[in-house]
Image (cartoon, rainbow, N blue to C red; front, top):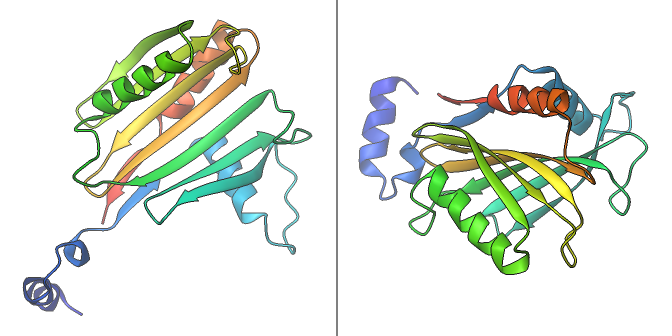
Length: 188
């Protein structure tokens, strides 16, 4: 189908969703390649022996999906570090901006634990990089999380790195800030 045919087809269809450009999450970073290799390694024929492994996912009625990755040798019941990648379909009820989404997460976390320290690291119109630290607080163990929220036209991507226990040292923190700053959204 050529471009003119696609435009005519889109004008004829009752829904705008079919006319939307395809949005792709793209990253060339080392950690992202490790995560993707791990996801591909779920095939029995794969011989993947990387630093991270796919640990499972959760989905919500086609509206969102979160994939979990852990270092080799750890499991979902006993982990020290975790990388998550979430894709959320945008809708009229989605927060208006990445900052609004983070504020909602912050308010929710505050109802569960008052001992959370938040810090915005980098803010743009379509993305936000932030971190928070939790001291031992009820059912929430001490942890340090660095996260990035990326907004595109049809999706919201939320990528996080969490370390349980004491806060990350500055070198580890900067490594994960760089890692999470690198991915971008490509619209085709």
